[in-house]
Image (cartoon, rainbow, N blue to C red):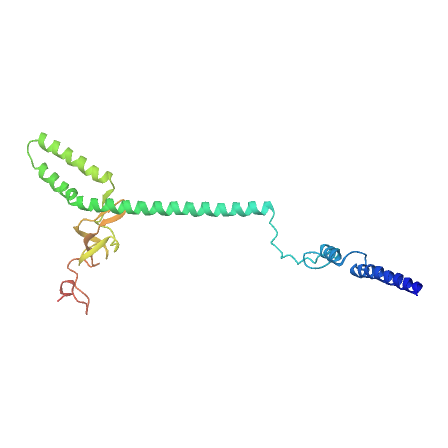
Length: 231
């Protein structure tokens, strides 16, 4: 009875000792490490995308970028742009210079047009001074008037040459037509003097032109006489 009890006690002790060892073995992973340590090692072995670190990461295709041009091409392009800008700036300076010149000429012409009556009266003054009998007086007055006339001419005022010239509609205004030995369209009489200022028309001339018929010549059949044209 005692022997049997000892065997059962040993068996119970052996079974009790085997159970913790078996539980500890079951708690270990297949590599002999605890499951938590194995899971931590496995997470460390994985990459940030959840794939094993030994597997190479797939790289996304990079977008193609325009390759930089060669330095020589860049220099040529910059030189061309500089040349174009220089030409545009030169054209701008020329254009603005012409505009300023035209504006200045217009302003000067307005002033000269206001002084034109004074210039025209110089000739009348010269005729009146010439009638004075005392020589020292007309000589001095004529000298002053001559200097005044030269001052106008020096500034660019120029009387038009009219007598015997062909009619120019851009410079002359026809007031009448009259019979004359001169060819048709020729200026035969000046009614109002015309003037130029620096080559531009300052005041149009008013003239009478030849009709192309000699004085006293009878008109042809069916032709209305010049004097009765407005009747």
